[in-house]
Image (cartoon, rainbow, N blue to C red):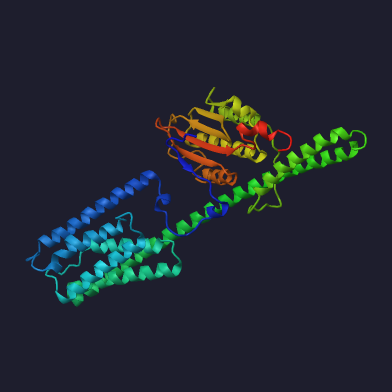
Length: 429
C-alpha cells in the first residue's frame, strides 16, 4: 500500500499506548506557527544577548589581558547558550545540563583564582543557565530527579556573581538572579502542569475509545451468540426428521463460533461500562452513503463530498468491528473537514488490497481558512481513531497534501483475505 506524504502510525500493543511521563514534548504545546516564532525569537535573543556581552567587553581597558575576561564572552557564554537551545540535538537534556554546569563551574573557579578585569560574569551564559532551569523544572522526571537537577543549576547560577570579586556586586547580582531563578521555576512548573494535564487528557480519550470499542464488540458478540443458539436448537429439532440437514447447520455454527472468538480476542485489556447505549451494526455502504449525504447537506453545496467504492470493496468480507470502525473513521474525518476546511470538496474512497481494506478520506484546500475552527479546538479526534484502528491491528496515516488539502488513510484487516476466500470455504478447512 502506498502512503506518500503521510505519517503512517504502525500498530502497537494497547498497553504500549498508555501515556508515560518521561519527557516534555515541547512541540505539542505549540502549533507549528508558534513553534517557528519561538525558534526565531530564541535565536534573536541569543544574538542580542551576545552582542551586549561583546559591547561590555569592548569597553574594558584591557579586554584580552586575562583569559577570564574574554572566555565568558567568546567560549563559555556561546557554549552554554547553545546547550540551552538544545544543540546538539543528539545530546539529551541530562548531558546538556551536566555540560553547562561543568563549564560554568570551571569558569567560576578559575575566575576566583585569576580575577577578571571586566568585573562582569557574562549575560549570555547566565541567560542560558536560566533557560536550563525552566527545562529541568518542566521536564517530566520523577519529582526527586527534577528537584536535584534544578537545584544544581540554581546553585551554579547563584555562584556566578563570585566572578566579580566584589561583595557589593555579589550581593546585588545574587538578589537579581534569585528573582530571575524564581520566575524561571514558576514557568517550568507551569509547563510541567500543562504537560501532565495533556497526558491525562490523552489517556482519557484513549480509554473512552477502548470502552466504546468494547461496547460495540459486546453487542456484536451477543448478536453472533444468539444466532448460534438458534441454529443449535434448529439442529436438535430436525435431527430425527432430517438428519442430512444437520451437517450444514453445524458448519454454520462452527463458522459463527470462529468469528465470535476472533471478536472476543479483541476484548483483551478492554474494560466495558455497565450503562451504555447499544449500537446495532447496519449495512456499511448504506451508512457511509448516509454520512456523505449528510455532510453534503450540512455543507450547503450540491456535491461537496462523494463516495467511491471499488468492486473488490463491495464484495469484501469484513468483521463487524471493522465495519463499525470504518464508519467511525469516516464520520470523524468528515467532521474535521467541516470544522477545519469549510467548503472543501471531499472524497471517501474504499478499496481492497489483498488482505486489507483501504479507507481514504481526502479533501481539497478550504475556500476560506478560519482562524478558529467551528466548534472550537479539540485535537483528540484522530487520537481516538488511532486507538481504535490499532486495536484492530490496522494502520492509520494522516498528512497534508501538496495542493493544500488533507488526507486520512487507514487500512483494516479483512475477515478473510481476498486471495484465500475460496480455500477457506472448502470443506475440512
